[in-house]
Length: 331
Ligand SMILES: [Mn+2]
Image 1 (cartoon, protein in one colour):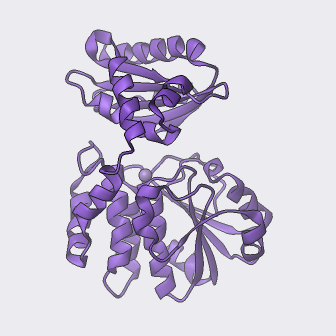
Image 2: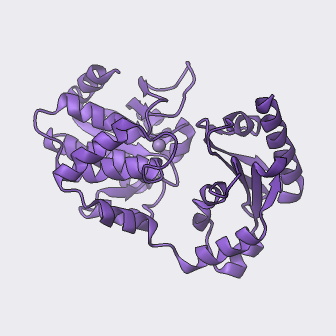
């Protein structure tokens, strides 16, 4: 990997922006916070500025109030003199929203650290991608291991552990490898309270979200001899359950956990003539080609897309396209 190039660019910079994608997850946030504390030790002036608010379940990473929500008035003065932006787990540069404009307007050099695929003609100054890595946090761990003279500090480990835990579904998904466990060992030795982090992230489900899940479970449709399970959610269901759109995170993983199901698909009607599609596979079938067909993308076994249209028009297309893909792959 290009660790030395990253190191050179960081060394040459004074003021550094760290950021991750909209609707951030544990991987993007954990990676950014680990790097933040490292750069602070290096004497850099750095800030984590995201285009979305910090989700409640990650507030344990924010004891030092390190996560900021972008707003041009507050931040553009600082960004104007920024030397470098490090972007974590983004998948697509567009997913940092308005921060992309600021980076381009102020000609800030960029390092992209990610385990999602990016095209050859990527827009970054330096593109560091390892699609085999279970999490972006595992790449940040490697970088810190190589450049730090001191051990990785507890505060950095809190972020790294959160990144690995959330992107592997707590060390259960097919991307979990020996490396993930090695990182976990190092984090435990550094004093990370792993069960506390687990509880904070996973055992704080809002009641509305659980009520919504009950409705979803009641309406799963099975296809392709039970290997495909799909469901939809619309704004009416959300209202009736008193849930928010954030609550649907993890539903597709849950539906995939049913016996015999290989692929789970969610069609979520956003309310503004768009639907969010979510694809999860146990590993027998790749589903990112279907996501790509609908203009999205992602990993082989976890992908998504956002499409124009309502559930009436979208569901038949998504179901038939997914069924066709499963059929192609089983012959
Ligand atoms: Mn990730």
